[in-house]
Length: 211
Image (cartoon, rainbow, N blue to C red):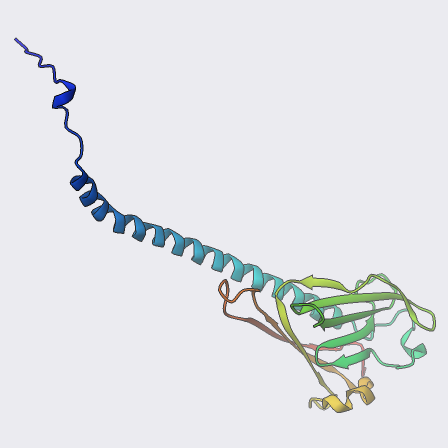
């Protein structure tokens, strides 16, 4: 025979304050440790994602500069002989290059410029294009920003003998440029997010000059 015993409310025992304090003392460090683990994992994921985006942007920028610069001097419109500076490379500076060529194969010569704009709070790599020459370039698309995080762009110019042309001589020796070295450095806005800098180096032979 089963005997049921009714427990009154007065007989029901809860946790005492001492027991709650002991439990908090035991569980508190575990909760804090778990929080730090989750926070570290989230930070590592964000850092990895930011690094991947940064590297991809830098690679895309480098690929575009290399691809277009290879067409420097390819002049189906016959523009270069009519220019004040009769050379494929129109501007040669450390952080700026401008050249003439048919970069998209539409049969028209264009002037393309890449330059690192230092006028803003953070450096911005810009690309500008002019499509029509009539005693001056017109029909420009404006100086469009290419990608975020491009902090450094450096161009090095080489003559036919393979030696670098000194910066002070470039303006007088634009027609002698045969190769261009390109260095791109990309960095995240915040050092706390991504402290390291991603660097890319390439070199382009100007195919349509000195033939």
